[in-house]
Image (cartoon, rainbow, N blue to C red; front, top):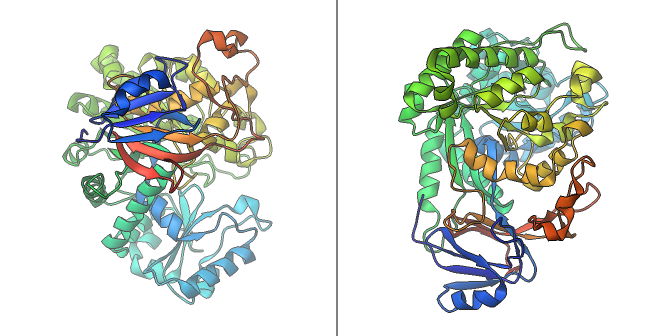
Length: 543
């Protein structure tokens, strides 16, 4: 993705670059970084610059990459009803009734409810939703987006839902019923609404310093026409007077490898689900959930995993799967092993396949993933939101099974490449919060350094898409950059006391990053460049 973009000189700040730990200026031209250095040398680039940005001490970093997101759903969540703030069933219903009185949408969409935080410890029912909405069509997604409550009018418009596995009669949909409901929702929502939702999500990403998003489409999540909308927005952006939009890497979560190729996707990967979610009790486990008599649900087995990995490898596409529970991880790892036996380990490694979430892998399985070059695309805020001895994971699984989940440090030690994202709208676009969540994992043994988490959120995302040129401020690298107001100090931060202290000494020349201690405010983005073009700029912040 190269456009003719202006020459910009940014000077008077701190540039996070491995080339020079004391760099204070950077010049970009034709969509690439062409120079980094100090302010004295920057004078040689100022005369030919189309614009000189005075940083006034601000931090310049590579733009973040969100390695797992759902753009349309993110936009719909922003304009829909936020149920994450509801404190009880009556409170959720009151909020729903108020929203319904003013909404003119074809379908009332709600997001983010979590019954584990309510005193009633149960979802809403279809009858309650019908009364609150006055009988309108409504679809209210749980926070993990793996189950939802549908109104009677919605189910009347999508009659196949009630006959699908996972519909329980109360209006709660999961598994196949959830997939059918989301396909029905895609038919009911006008294309113009989807266009606005995707545009809104990309704008939100840019506001948070994100220059690339991995869009996880799938037949049960979004129509393939979303990719047409994304392409049209990319062509629209960056022209004179129009902001650029973050670059989008496309993934299609389907076993139809040829369709993924026709859609121009990087992989038949992403939300190709081997199982579901912990919150909806649909993740596949070896032993039953601690709070319900079920082991969850397995959607693909090892044989199906093998065939898909083989087909993708031969087609030159990435294979990948949504996998969370320990039984699901076992099936995926067995499938990857079998694919390597058939094709050869080197061939599978060259495919650079990926797994999404992979929250409950054991050390032996991590070792296999590392040996096969499989990227773990993970979401640090999952631990931030639901980890800990009293969090959702502990409620669903018990403390002992929950404690080692989202094993960032163990994965890294096993040689598994990491790429971090949000799974937005499950958690929001907030990359510094994700970096902090990884560095302050609720289980101390799984903490990584701020620098390692930052790399997984920048360069790791490029590499996860088999793009090795970006995610770093260096000569010839894509000029996808972000400029930050940093409320605290720039430091080399190692929350894990076991890390050698030498790296925190300024004489070591390690590039510095914001102090992300949990008691401090996070940096704020004031400028995002995508291949040298402005995708976001805070009004009045920069001269």
